[in-house]
Each structure stands twice: as C-alpha cells, then as structure tokens.
Image (tube, rainbow, N blue to C red; front, top):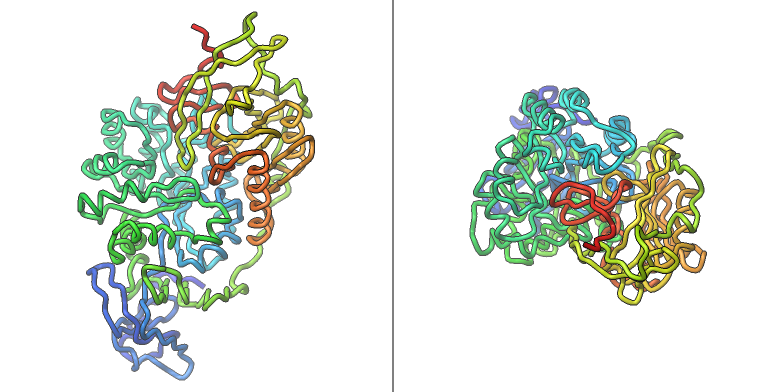
Length: 595
C-alpha cells in the first residue's frame, strides 16, 4: 500500500530516532545525491512504510525483521522519472508496460493518454488511470488537451472540452495539461485552447507544450499564455532559444525520434544551467524496451554524448519532479521521499541490478516480482472500436483525377527516417482511365485515411514517399492523434485486404502481400493497445517489422513513422480523414496541384 506522507511521518521519525526498526536497509552504497551533485560513498538508507526514513549510517535501524541489501561497490540512485510519454505508443497495457519499464529503472511516469482519449474521451483516460492505481509503477496524468488535435481538419472518436479539463484538474493523479499541440490555436486565442490553459493555471498545475515551429513570434506568444515546456526540439539552436525564454526543455529519445545527439549540445557545448532540462522518451515501442531499455537508455545516450553521469541522472530524476511540483515525494534519496531506489554497478552502462518501488523490491538481478502486478480487464465496448461504413473495396483506394489529362502534379507527403517531421514535395504521376497511379519505382505509394469512429464513412486519398515499399500494402489504426484507419500500398487490391483484415482484428497494425497477411499486431483495446503479454507483443512486432522489410522497407521503426503521417500538428504536410493538411498554414489543401 502506498502511504501519503502525513499518514506515516510520525513512524518515519521514530525510525530515524532509533525507536522503531526499518523495514529495509540498503548498506554501504555510493549514494548519488542529485540535490548537491555529490557521490556519497559508504552511505546507508533506511526505509519504512514505503518511504525513506534516514540517510547515513543505519546499523541502529536494523531490527529482527529488517531486510538488508548490501550495496557496497555499487551506486544507489533515485528511481527514474519520465516526464513525458504515451503508454499507448508501447502497444501495451499500463500493466504490461510497467513490467518492462520497472526493471529498467523507471519508477514514475507522467503519461499523456491523448491517444486513447481521441477514441473514448475522458472514459478512456479514466480506464488507464484505474489500471495504473494498483501497480508498483507510479503513474501521473497530464490530461489530454487536444482532442481532436486539429479541430476542423480531422475527426476523432471523442472531444475533450474545457469543462472536462476543469474537472480533471481537481484529481490528485492529474498533475497538468497534456502537450498542447494546437499551437496556432493557442497563439491566436482559440476559445477551447485558452480555456483549457486557464483552467490548468487556476488549479496551479503544469501546462506542458508541443512547439515544432520555427516562428519566434509564435513561440513567444505561446509561452506567454502559460505553456511551460516542449519536447519537440530537434536542434541545439531551438533548445537554447526555448531555455533562454524560460521553457523547460524536454530532450527526447524514443524508438524513432533520436534528438539527444543534437539537442544535448546545449549542455556539452553551451554549458547551460541544466536545472530546467529533462530527458524523456515520448514514444517507445516494445522492441526498444527489451533491447535498449526505457528512460535508462536515454540517460545512457546523454552520457555517451558527453554529459556527466550526475547531470544526466538529475535530468531524469529531480528535474522532472520539480517541473511537475512533486519534489516533496519524488526525485531524490532524502528523508520523507518515496523509497524508489535503483542499485547499479556501472553508471555508464546504466542497467539496474535491483529496483525498489515504495520500499519493495520489484526487480532483483533479472527476476521481476510478478505477484505485484494485478490483472485489469477493459470493458467489451473498448475492445470493439472499429466502425467502418462498409467493407472496403478496391475502388475505395483508387485515386480519381479531377481533370482529363494523361499526367498530373500531386502534393506528396515525404517522410523522414527517425524524425516526426515530413516535407511537402510535388510529383508528376501518370493517369490511367481517370485514375492517378502510384509510382512504385520512384517510391511514391498510394495513401488513404479512413474514418473509423462513427461508421459514417469518409476516405481521404493521397500519396506518400520515403518508405520504399516495392509491393503489398500496410495498414494501422495507430494513426496519431485521431487514430483513424491508415492504409498505404502499391496496389488497391492489397490495400483493401489490409484494411478489412485489420478491422476484423479490432485494430492494430498489419502487412499484406498478394492478398495474404504477412504480419500483424492485433490491438483490440481502442485499436491502440494489445491485450497480450510483453513477450507476445515483442514477437508480433518483430514479425511485423520483418514483413515491412520483405515488402522493401529498410527504415528504422517504419510503423512508428507511418503512424504519424496523419498527425496534423507537426510540419509540413499530413493526411487526415478529411484530406491533405498543410500544417504550416493549418488548412486543407488539394491533392492535385497543376497551377
């Protein structure tokens, strides 16, 4: 059981005075003091009621039933805190994600569940929160701000209102407003965006941001409204600019977005004060969790780029705790704090030997304590969220030209490997019998975004380049942020099969070639989450990734890049169920551009 400090403070002082024994004592380790920047050798920690009672020589606190861990020769580190992430991006339930993250040293997360809220609104958020409450992983919520992310440009399954945000800010497990992606709406005074920010500030909670634009005037206007952080920074110059303007800089390293190498130069070359910088993951998929880790991987990457280990640890512990105003409970190994503790033998390798959460050992030298993770069942309707107007046909994926010509110029979405951004490029494509044909030889594929929430239909068609598919088709209901049905392929026959077969699975991701399914990850929970174990999902994702390669794609984590092709808040161009979106100008544009 997790105890508020006021319930156990008297007992903690009794342990500190030697009047009561500790539940757990960690002996002789080198304590990483993130408050002073010191490595304190041969330091003990006494734990009682899930919190730290005493730091120093603790022999007096060892009683008959006290558990003792010998940490001599190893480092004792605060549990890692991920200040911005989407559990849904892992494809796992909160429970299965926690089983993967805790062994890697992540003991606290600030999740932004705007993926599930785009499908089920506030109910989806509450279900994930309910699942999280019984876990050893501490899960705080930044309540979704942009549902849908771009009103008028896309259609989601639900809408979050100012009233919803105001009510959410009264909950103890909601610590702020999730990334405010509609930055033009914020700057130009959109009533909903302004209202959500106002309700958050009134509740004295944190407004987290998302600002990928290069426009300085918009940036400063954005900050002036109360938005105080950004994780969409990809260059050193952007990082410096945001820090100088008072923003909390979140440096991201996910499965597909690798920003540490460039952005962390503000630390290694510009030598800025690092107290207003955090390391975050944002989006991580299952293979990364198994093969590289979670936030420990981001800490490791920062160290590899020249950041001092102490500073890297501070950016993943005390800094996010202070940013979200939870430093009374989190972020350092000091009296009164939750006993979330890592024991590590090598800070450069940064793989925990032992992970302790709330004073309980949850991971010990390769063994996860499975009994600490209760099961949680999502209701029937959440597992049946794919509502298509009709079974999709070949004709639904044939792009009809608006004129009578043999060739036509089209706007194409050019993706960039390991980047969330896209480029707007033009291509001249052949027209056959009134249909615009893809150009597989030049890597231009047919793209579709199909409305899947209301059963009313609605299909937008376009073209994408950069994936390298030579045959077949792929589809996904993980389509940030409205999570409609995305389909892309070299031919309409395989596209139709991929879309229909994925709908039968309840959503997820699929690869089809020659009418045959070559790989699939079923995600029946809101079309976003698997109901299987981590190991099973890792195996399915591996097969899916292999199937992408068989079709000709050599891109790193292609399904993650594909899932963002419908996100109309990151420049330059996207597709939604309503059509092509010019993100720079926040407007719908035509597919053909023959002027």
